[in-house]
Amino acid sequence: MVKQSIFGRIAQLAKANVNSLLDNAEDPQKMLDQMVRDYTNNIAEAESAVAQTIGNLRMLEDDYNEDVKNARDWGNKALAASRKADEYRSGGNPADAEKFDNLAKVALQRQMAAESEAKGAEPSISSQQEVVAKLKTGLDQMKGKLNELTSKRNELVARSKTAAAQSQVHDAIKSIDFMDPTSEVGRFEEKIRREEAKVRGQQELTESSLDAQFNQLEDLGEQVEIEARLAALKSGGAKPAIGAAGSAHSANTVDEADFDKL
Image (cartoon, rainbow, N blue to C red; front, side, top):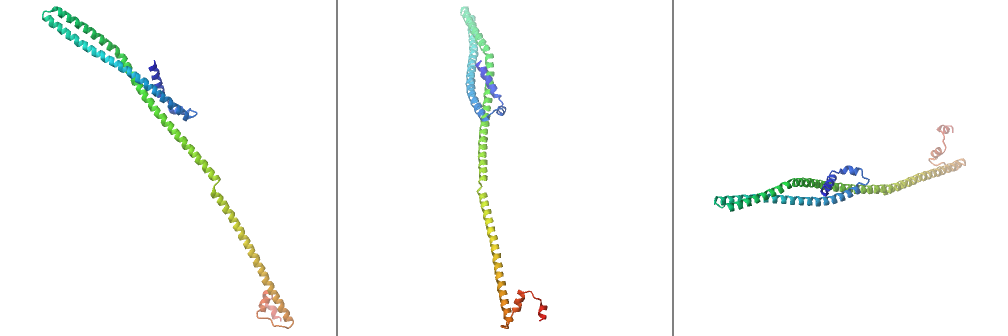
């Protein structure tokens, strides 16, 4: 009964669909860990049961071989006793001949008993051999499933660690983007450029204002000179300097026809 129960458990575990179980699991890693533990424990129990079953089979086989050997030995003894009886009978000794014939009969009886025991053990031995073969096959399948489970668990753990590492890297990248020092430098550089542009604009304005002021000063000086020379002319004083007409022309727009009228 125990053997059949263990055999049923082995068959059930060996046929388990790991992928289907994982698909329906809320926490695949925990389920894999538990399945690995269950398979490991069941394999240990199955190995013990298989070892015991094999031991029992070997005992039956030893008994069977012993019965076969005994049957052969008793057959040889019966043959030897029968020949000895024939010798005594040929020698005219019927009493000893009868004695050895009786010994031959006893040997034949024991031969038949040994043969009967051996024949009776054959079905049990055959059945046990079949059970052992199935248990060994199931045990090998369970070990294969355990390797599959272990591989799945290791793969899942590795993928989980990789995903966690990638998540950390992604979070780090997001953090770097959020506090990107190059972007801060870029904004600071842009601010400096705006300040520099403002300074250049102010310089241009300043330079333009100074030029205008100097131009006004030059125009004012020239006008003063013209007025002074005009006053001198009216008073009959000093003669106009060379180039005064040119200067007056630059100060007052007079046509050449006006001079022709003089």
